[in-house]
Length: 205
Ligand code: ITT
Image 1 (tube, rainbow, N blue to C red):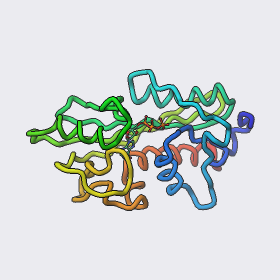
Image 2: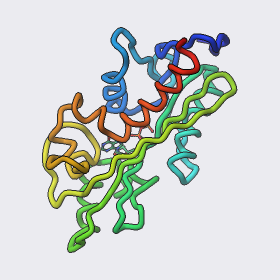
Image 3: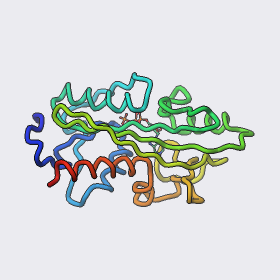
């Protein structure tokens, strides 16, 4: 697959979603206009782990998209997500995926709850930064959802830290919501909406 050369009309299905995380693909797929299927890294034969070494969410998001764009010559979008907890000075932040030293979500949640024991301030937010690369142009879109960290994990839907994240305005965790309910109100949904608004305005005429 070659780079997209006609910037006038770029369909979502022409863009590769540069992520190895199937849960992200599922949520984004649900928010796509009907009839559009997302293409992923497998579709371009990219099976290696994408680099994430910049130390920031914005930087890692950009790094993943640049890697795929440069190595595979395709237009693409990526995203990086972090959970930022106020009482922990914004941690785990860029280390969200492997907070406990592993990528095991249960171990990550255990460490988070331990670090917040006896802590009254449970305020937290998820932040997602999408990076879209079309031709030589790089665009970023941020989505934030504020909420709090629950005392105990509840629910078995979603992924990652969903069992302990209660978004503001709700009394349930993300893991108690169906994907259809979580996706549009989430950090990822907000960032994705900003990206599709940009695409609509500039490319989907
Ligand atoms: P890619 O880099 O391949 O996209 P990843 O899983 O490594 O996939 P990140 O580097 O963005 O993704 O890591 C973010 C981690 O944050 C992820 O592994 C989950 O543990 C957590 N996470 C991300 N989105 C989440 C969500 O919507 N709900 C709960 N936890 C989430």
